[in-house]
Image (cartoon, rainbow, N blue to C red; front, side, top):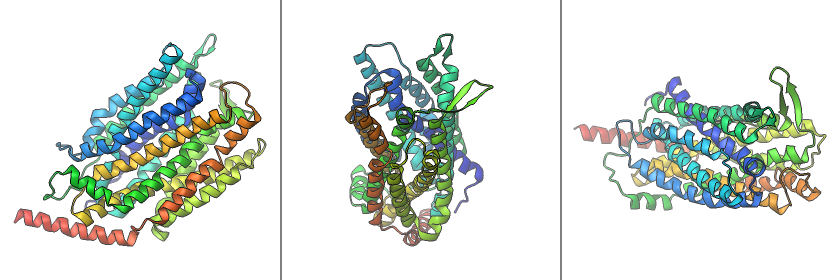
Length: 468
């Protein structure tokens, strides 16, 4: 069994650093960008998120099926990191550009660019996620690899959250003030270049080692039939969707919370750069730092009590803390930031477990059926991510409209209360549902070690038979 070297783990991590930079831009800032910078209503954006992301969610399994059937000298999944890196950056820039158009023209432009962005995101992220399932067959090494991945993912998120708002102001400065539209576009250009380079390094520094059984013949019907009878896959899909609803609601609401509920936006100023750092930036960066703590805790805790129990308890605690968050007022700064830290630790610990468990499901499927469809199974992880984000993003836009939100004006008490609910009780519901789903997950770590050992024996025997 090949041992993964540090360089390869870092190379794999670079891929999610790149993805997470843009994912965080979408989850934290895109709704705000559309409503407060581009000038589209919250209700229209919420509907757009639902329509475009449903198509995008359906696209993920298609990408998984295609990548499973890709056969190049670089493997099945690595080539997509090379082919899609530059289109990923280019479309990202277009998504955060604001051409002078009529109101209907703005909506059409947003639909087109956002749809394209989600398509290229799927085209690179589904193969990237699937790559973990074929880099090593060892389940403990996969958890380690997943830990590296999410440390880099949250590092990419921290970079964006710490620099996005300051860069927008810095790059958008004009003699008349700040050109927010130009500032956002120039900021995204920087992130796009970084992301494209990092995707290439992931391609160059990683290897595919786990192959489908040599006797396996291509059969989409068989792959889909096996997936349809894979109960752990359905359970993890449901848990993943609910987890992402929890996160996307909290992420998407945070910037509104500090702009419209918190009357004091500026925390401090950096004199040399003449930049004001807002409480929202500190809050979001603290959350990402806490996510990294959660990622680091995931492996030792799951080694002790199992992946399932770690996942379940993290979501229960996150739900309880989120409900308590509603009681905090504008003067409870310490408690607001403390609970953000604690909730984010819980959320961070879940993600490496989620992706490692999808790799276990790919092994379980091969063990049970004799067929391996890594890309198809891992596309479901991306699909759950997109679907949870779709529902969470749409709900955020719709609830803002429901509570009477209007951009760039003082909010009514009803709207302010609604924004508080969107950071507390409403996302807590998603966390509770996620914990309920995971109760029914049956692939224990002990069982998966047995599965891994049996698969290793099968592969060794097949190779010996092939050579004889």
